Length: 275
Ligand code: KIV
Image (tube, rainbow, N blue to C red; front, side):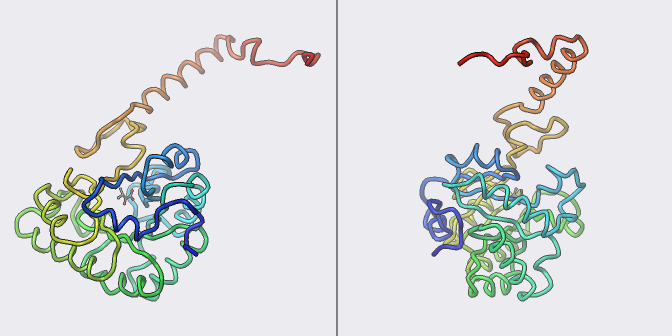
């Protein structure tokens, strides 16, 4: 039986088999209604540790805990029946040792029904990825801009320019050889993303990478335009829900102050209507 509670969803091996075919579609989700909205459109849904910034207003992903990931993982799992669920391992939950990583990955899979975990890091995480995979934990890797290492990367910069390209290529080869079933490439140059995609046998999932990747992922709140303050270059806004939502709230506030809401159709009479 699969590790996932989601019986009709693809499994990690199915995602791996999509290498070189129709691009893999994915988004992040943090809540049940959002998961329901994307369930029939995505091959997999990621509960990213971006939840810390997007939902909880944290300044980075570093403050995200196992409890936060599990709570949102359970919420998203309730909204999925077609998409595969992947959950991020938060900062500090896997870097210390393969054993620590296994303990926390097993907890995530057990308590959420997710099919796989994602963790950040290239060559230095290869042993941990191999350890997890050998013990039944499917792993999606994440290289390039890895937000949990923001303090050592020196900001949210494009990765893989110049000599750094060979290092990133080595990272991609290492996570693939270690048994990851796919790898997220975040904010790497398009040329390098294409080179990595051509060289490794597992699917690459781009975010700020290249249209040539085997799949794409975006933070759902970014692509729905729920934020109005900033927009990274790699985000395309498919809607402006932030602006629409604020306009709706302003209309509600005006109607409450003018006593035009609630209208008669929103209130209850003394006698219940017949029938
Ligand atoms: O945390 C996250 O949302 C992510 C994706 C954007 C890849 O890691």
